[in-house]
Image 1 (cartoon, rainbow, N blue to C red):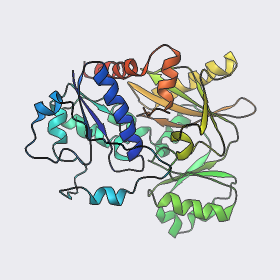
Image 2 (image 1 turned 120 degrees about the horizontal axis):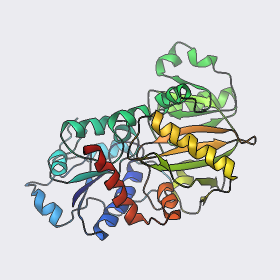
Image 3 (image 1 turned 90 degrees about the vertical axis):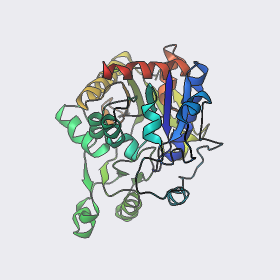
Image 4 (image 1 turned 120 degrees about the vertical axis):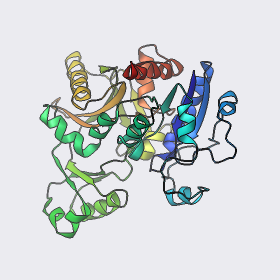
Amino acid sequence: MKIVVLAGGLCSERNVSIVSGKQVYNALRKKGHNVVLLDVFMGYEESPCDIDELFENNYSFAGDITVDELVPDLKAVKASRKNQSDCFLGDNVADICRKADITFLALHGGVGENGQIQATLDMLGIKYTGPNYLGCAIAMKGVTKSVLKQNRVSVPEGEIFTPADKENGTIDKWNNFPCVVKPCNGGSSVGVSIVEDKKDFDKAMDEAFAWEDEVVVEEYIKGREFSIGLIEGKALPIIEIIPESGFYDYVNKYQAGKTKDVCPAELSEEVTKKMQSEAEKAFKALNLDSYARIDFLLDKDNNTYCLEANSLPGMTPTSLLPQEALVLGTNYEDLCEQIIEVSLKKYK
């Protein structure tokens, strides 16, 4: 097959996406496919653009980018773009994707995961991996919470705030501590804070608003953290996430050795079935298809709380979905092909 792997973009998870994209690109090449790894924001800026040659040569834009402890400087990324256009899609991206049999979305957060890129590809007649645009839009943090509550999936109590709420003093009414503050559309725990008191709360809100104009504030629930990958709505083995220190933040997620992952998670059969059932219920309620990942907390009384949904789970060396699939005997290369296979079902 001819496959484009789209990565990069212009969000806090840019480097995470590029590392995911490189992994997927290498895996699909090992499987014998002609693969082009493309930055969705930068595109292919060389002229002329011989698309057939790109596939024949297995073009890749990615060099030695890794996920370090710092979030990328997006202003610098934007300034390095040759044409300085205000269009999100880079040069030749649409034309190259249209030549492919399918586009593998290795994007994370923001435009890549909120349904916008999916809707754009739909309008251009481009096939892609992962859920449809509506499922991706619903699976963003703010909307997710209300949809899950309506479908009787337990979630932490919380509210969504905007800069207008800060100006009119509505935010000052929040008085439930400790709490969690996090941007609505971002991922990888960028801009996320666990807050103990009002002083820290104001600082955390400022940090979150620096990333986005919608911020979720929710009650803090102390407990063990888990994640469940799903393929076609069927739950994979549960993985427990145990950070070396603190919570599962950007550093702990992507720096090797910072987090211990246990899969299958050490849970009773009853709790395992309950959590997997909640994940499958959430997948359906959010109108997801193809594949996704759902995150949970489990408190000391074995109550489960759905934290969020990831419509395009990470595929980096430390990512959770590949670890869960491996427990079932599916290696990384086979998982990439399986994702393509189930995603193509949308178009039959």
